Length: 388
Image (cartoon, rainbow, N blue to C red):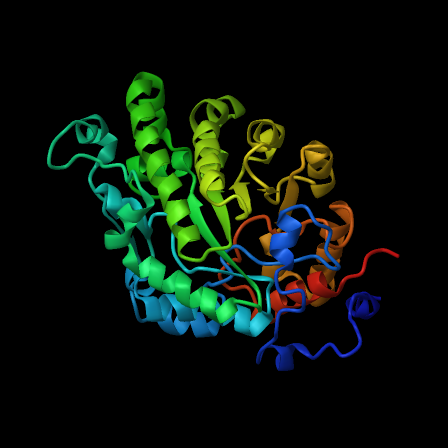
């Protein structure tokens, strides 16, 4: 029975996994993701994966095991190669530049590093001295008030995006990304990974005026960072609220949502034809709040794996927003081919059928995911023709 299920969704001429891992082209139309993001219904469902450039790929590990993260992400030759590896192998509908949400922080005077085996580390002890760092002085946290402000500090990003645009033009879409203001502010204050963002929440409750000022500078900076990426060739921008799971609906509406709205509005004013995706990881419990606040300024809302996509479809109905998501990353990590293909079909059906949403995971690809499982995921999205 499982063999029969595994065969469902295969199309004539589909190559074996072993063969296809040698390379696969994105099916036409090459700009399908952009069209669907802007509200068109596609002939099939466009697909990409968060963390698609990652350590699950052997080719990627040849770099990650040898070079530190910032060297990889800020050296154009390496960042370009790491961005393109997965696309050449799988033929997703988009390439997303290899980078990190923390990358713009040095332009504000906040340094960070990524420690192998530990993860990101933000320097400066903002947990203790945030208020002092917002005062005038040599260590003041700066805001980047113009997109060109990144030209000097982040010129490497222009080189990366322009090269990626040249490699993908007429072949697939190119996605840039920024962290959401609250997530990035919380990351900076916490100094690294956290379960609840308790330290930044203390500032939010005890000295909200300090938190607000930090968020204001962060919002201005990230607005210009998004515009800078679009200026350099990014065709779509995703805003990652990676720590949205730390927030109640009320805290999101007070401290996080308004900043996202400002970033999106600023980008849309300069680049009205660049679709904007917002993804609040762990924020599915207040998806309606996201829709109510952001539907006028974003195009796509990402859904994490903790929500039913059919229910999300009902929430966004009439808003003009397109859904993105939301297959459980663990299906790719541990599922067999039949289970992966079925999860893809179920997601597409729940969103209303082929070409009506952007297929993605509910979070990033997990380390240890078999490479062929990503192939099954991408193939099924691009070939599934619907229940009938």
